[in-house]
Length: 220
Image 1 (tube, rainbow, N blue to C red):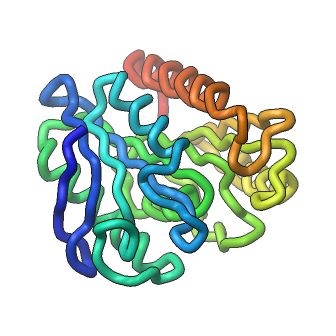
Image 2 (tube, one colour; image 1 turned 60 degrees about the horizontal axis):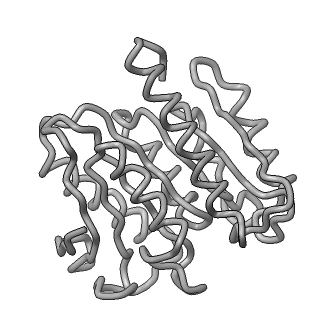
Protein backbone atom coordinates (compact mmCIF):
# COMPACT_ATOMS: atom_id res chain seq x y z
CA UNK A 1 0.00 0.00 0.00
CA UNK A 2 2.56 2.62 -1.08
CA UNK A 3 1.88 6.27 -0.43
CA UNK A 4 1.84 8.35 -3.60
CA UNK A 5 1.98 12.08 -4.24
CA UNK A 6 0.98 13.50 -7.61
CA UNK A 7 -0.05 16.89 -8.96
CA UNK A 8 -3.70 17.92 -9.09
CA UNK A 9 -5.41 21.14 -10.17
CA UNK A 10 -4.67 22.88 -6.83
CA UNK A 11 -1.28 21.34 -6.12
CA UNK A 12 -0.20 18.14 -4.45
CA UNK A 13 -2.66 15.28 -3.96
CA UNK A 14 -2.01 12.47 -1.51
CA UNK A 15 -3.08 8.92 -2.20
CA UNK A 16 -2.53 5.24 -1.57
CA UNK A 17 -1.90 3.12 -4.61
CA UNK A 18 -1.57 -0.60 -5.22
CA UNK A 19 -0.38 -1.76 -8.68
CA UNK A 20 -2.39 -4.39 -10.48
CA UNK A 21 -1.36 -8.03 -10.64
CA UNK A 22 -1.05 -7.88 -14.43
CA UNK A 23 0.16 -5.16 -16.80
CA UNK A 24 -3.29 -4.93 -18.38
CA UNK A 25 -5.18 -5.08 -15.08
CA UNK A 26 -8.26 -2.86 -14.83
CA UNK A 27 -8.01 0.26 -12.70
CA UNK A 28 -10.26 1.40 -9.87
CA UNK A 29 -10.55 4.71 -8.06
CA UNK A 30 -12.42 5.34 -4.79
CA UNK A 31 -13.86 8.67 -3.59
CA UNK A 32 -14.25 9.50 0.11
CA UNK A 33 -17.15 11.13 2.00
CA UNK A 34 -17.60 14.84 2.72
CA UNK A 35 -14.34 16.43 3.98
CA UNK A 36 -16.12 18.90 6.27
CA UNK A 37 -17.68 15.98 8.15
CA UNK A 38 -14.47 14.01 8.59
CA UNK A 39 -14.37 12.26 5.23
CA UNK A 40 -10.90 11.08 4.16
CA UNK A 41 -9.37 8.25 2.17
CA UNK A 42 -8.96 6.43 5.50
CA UNK A 43 -12.71 6.17 6.05
CA UNK A 44 -13.42 2.52 6.86
CA UNK A 45 -15.75 1.94 3.92
CA UNK A 46 -13.31 3.60 1.50
CA UNK A 47 -10.49 1.51 2.98
CA UNK A 48 -12.48 -1.70 2.60
CA UNK A 49 -13.52 -0.86 -0.97
CA UNK A 50 -9.87 -0.24 -1.79
CA UNK A 51 -8.87 -3.71 -0.63
CA UNK A 52 -11.87 -5.28 -2.34
CA UNK A 53 -10.48 -4.09 -5.67
CA UNK A 54 -6.85 -4.83 -4.72
CA UNK A 55 -7.71 -8.44 -3.86
CA UNK A 56 -9.15 -8.86 -7.35
CA UNK A 57 -5.98 -7.68 -9.05
CA UNK A 58 -7.05 -4.13 -9.90
CA UNK A 59 -4.58 -1.26 -10.00
CA UNK A 60 -6.31 0.69 -7.24
CA UNK A 61 -6.15 4.26 -5.96
CA UNK A 62 -7.78 6.01 -3.03
CA UNK A 63 -6.87 9.63 -2.42
CA UNK A 64 -7.54 12.71 -0.33
CA UNK A 65 -9.24 15.52 -2.22
CA UNK A 66 -8.04 19.11 -1.87
CA UNK A 67 -7.55 20.34 1.66
CA UNK A 68 -7.70 16.86 3.20
CA UNK A 69 -4.66 15.27 4.86
CA UNK A 70 -1.56 16.23 2.94
CA UNK A 71 -3.44 17.26 -0.20
CA UNK A 72 -3.11 20.94 -1.01
CA UNK A 73 -5.92 23.39 -1.71
CA UNK A 74 -9.22 24.26 -0.07
CA UNK A 75 -12.58 22.52 -0.03
CA UNK A 76 -14.60 23.65 -3.06
CA UNK A 77 -18.10 22.21 -2.43
CA UNK A 78 -17.89 19.87 -5.42
CA UNK A 79 -16.39 21.43 -8.57
CA UNK A 80 -12.82 21.33 -7.29
CA UNK A 81 -13.25 17.86 -5.84
CA UNK A 82 -14.51 16.64 -9.22
CA UNK A 83 -11.41 18.15 -10.84
CA UNK A 84 -9.25 16.33 -8.28
CA UNK A 85 -11.01 13.05 -9.07
CA UNK A 86 -10.52 13.55 -12.81
CA UNK A 87 -6.82 14.34 -12.30
CA UNK A 88 -6.48 11.27 -10.08
CA UNK A 89 -8.02 9.00 -12.70
CA UNK A 90 -5.75 10.58 -15.33
CA UNK A 91 -2.73 9.83 -13.14
CA UNK A 92 -3.89 6.27 -12.50
CA UNK A 93 -4.43 5.60 -16.19
CA UNK A 94 -1.12 7.23 -17.14
CA UNK A 95 0.85 4.72 -15.09
CA UNK A 96 -1.30 1.85 -16.34
CA UNK A 97 -1.34 2.51 -20.10
CA UNK A 98 -2.16 -1.12 -20.94
CA UNK A 99 -5.13 -1.28 -18.58
CA UNK A 100 -8.34 -2.82 -19.85
CA UNK A 101 -11.27 -1.20 -18.13
CA UNK A 102 -11.89 1.31 -15.35
CA UNK A 103 -14.17 1.28 -12.32
CA UNK A 104 -15.33 4.07 -10.01
CA UNK A 105 -16.58 3.73 -6.45
CA UNK A 106 -17.69 6.35 -3.97
CA UNK A 107 -19.41 6.70 -0.60
CA UNK A 108 -21.90 9.48 0.23
CA UNK A 109 -20.43 12.80 -1.01
CA UNK A 110 -17.86 10.63 -2.78
CA UNK A 111 -20.69 8.83 -4.59
CA UNK A 112 -21.88 12.20 -5.95
CA UNK A 113 -18.36 13.08 -7.11
CA UNK A 114 -17.86 9.59 -8.53
CA UNK A 115 -21.04 9.66 -10.58
CA UNK A 116 -20.12 13.07 -12.00
CA UNK A 117 -16.72 11.65 -12.98
CA UNK A 118 -18.51 8.71 -14.56
CA UNK A 119 -20.35 11.10 -16.89
CA UNK A 120 -17.07 12.53 -18.15
CA UNK A 121 -15.28 9.24 -18.75
CA UNK A 122 -16.89 6.96 -21.34
CA UNK A 123 -14.19 4.35 -20.81
CA UNK A 124 -15.55 3.52 -17.33
CA UNK A 125 -17.30 0.14 -17.47
CA UNK A 126 -18.83 0.03 -14.01
CA UNK A 127 -19.47 1.86 -10.78
CA UNK A 128 -20.43 1.28 -7.16
CA UNK A 129 -22.35 4.11 -5.52
CA UNK A 130 -22.84 3.77 -1.76
CA UNK A 131 -25.52 5.92 -0.10
CA UNK A 132 -25.69 8.60 -2.82
CA UNK A 133 -27.32 11.70 -1.19
CA UNK A 134 -29.81 12.58 -3.93
CA UNK A 135 -31.72 14.77 -1.46
CA UNK A 136 -28.65 16.93 -0.75
CA UNK A 137 -26.99 17.26 -4.16
CA UNK A 138 -28.08 17.67 -7.76
CA UNK A 139 -27.87 14.39 -9.68
CA UNK A 140 -29.64 15.72 -12.79
CA UNK A 141 -26.36 15.43 -14.72
CA UNK A 142 -27.04 11.70 -15.08
CA UNK A 143 -28.76 12.08 -18.42
CA UNK A 144 -28.12 9.54 -19.62
CA UNK A 145 -26.00 7.42 -17.29
CA UNK A 146 -23.26 5.92 -19.49
CA UNK A 147 -22.54 2.73 -17.58
CA UNK A 148 -24.21 0.03 -15.53
CA UNK A 149 -23.57 -0.01 -11.82
CA UNK A 150 -24.64 -0.77 -8.26
CA UNK A 151 -26.46 1.67 -5.99
CA UNK A 152 -26.57 0.39 -2.42
CA UNK A 153 -27.98 2.12 0.64
CA UNK A 154 -29.49 1.52 4.07
CA UNK A 155 -33.18 1.45 4.92
CA UNK A 156 -32.53 3.59 8.02
CA UNK A 157 -30.31 6.20 6.35
CA UNK A 158 -31.15 9.63 7.79
CA UNK A 159 -28.68 11.47 5.53
CA UNK A 160 -29.30 9.97 2.08
CA UNK A 161 -32.99 9.27 2.63
CA UNK A 162 -34.19 5.98 1.11
CA UNK A 163 -37.00 7.71 -0.81
CA UNK A 164 -34.47 10.10 -2.35
CA UNK A 165 -32.19 7.25 -3.40
CA UNK A 166 -35.26 5.55 -4.87
CA UNK A 167 -35.97 8.64 -6.99
CA UNK A 168 -32.45 8.44 -8.39
CA UNK A 169 -32.77 4.74 -9.15
CA UNK A 170 -36.18 5.19 -10.76
CA UNK A 171 -34.82 7.90 -13.05
CA UNK A 172 -31.86 5.77 -14.12
CA UNK A 173 -34.04 2.70 -14.70
CA UNK A 174 -35.78 4.50 -17.55
CA UNK A 175 -32.62 4.52 -19.65
CA UNK A 176 -31.97 1.89 -22.28
CA UNK A 177 -28.80 -0.13 -22.60
CA UNK A 178 -27.66 0.03 -19.00
CA UNK A 179 -28.62 -1.87 -15.87
CA UNK A 180 -28.74 -0.15 -12.50
CA UNK A 181 -28.86 -2.67 -9.69
CA UNK A 182 -30.30 -1.37 -6.43
CA UNK A 183 -29.75 -3.05 -3.09
CA UNK A 184 -31.27 -1.85 0.17
CA UNK A 185 -29.69 -3.10 3.38
CA UNK A 186 -32.44 -3.44 5.96
CA UNK A 187 -31.65 -1.72 9.25
CA UNK A 188 -28.45 -0.05 8.01
CA UNK A 189 -27.85 3.65 8.67
CA UNK A 190 -25.87 6.10 6.53
CA UNK A 191 -22.56 4.95 8.00
CA UNK A 192 -23.45 1.23 7.89
CA UNK A 193 -22.61 0.98 11.58
CA UNK A 194 -22.05 -2.67 12.40
CA UNK A 195 -22.91 -3.56 8.81
CA UNK A 196 -19.72 -2.82 6.88
CA UNK A 197 -18.82 -6.47 6.43
CA UNK A 198 -22.16 -7.22 4.78
CA UNK A 199 -21.83 -4.05 2.70
CA UNK A 200 -18.45 -5.09 1.30
CA UNK A 201 -19.66 -8.66 0.74
CA UNK A 202 -22.55 -7.33 -1.35
CA UNK A 203 -20.27 -5.02 -3.31
CA UNK A 204 -17.80 -7.87 -3.88
CA UNK A 205 -20.51 -10.19 -5.13
CA UNK A 206 -21.73 -7.52 -7.54
CA UNK A 207 -18.23 -6.77 -8.82
CA UNK A 208 -17.45 -10.44 -9.40
CA UNK A 209 -20.74 -10.98 -11.21
CA UNK A 210 -20.34 -7.92 -13.44
CA UNK A 211 -16.77 -8.76 -14.35
CA UNK A 212 -17.77 -12.29 -15.30
CA UNK A 213 -20.55 -10.88 -17.46
CA UNK A 214 -18.20 -8.41 -19.16
CA UNK A 215 -15.63 -11.16 -19.76
CA UNK A 216 -18.36 -13.26 -21.37
CA UNK A 217 -19.20 -10.43 -23.75
CA UNK A 218 -22.05 -8.88 -21.80
CA UNK A 219 -23.05 -5.24 -22.19
CA UNK A 220 -22.04 -2.22 -20.18
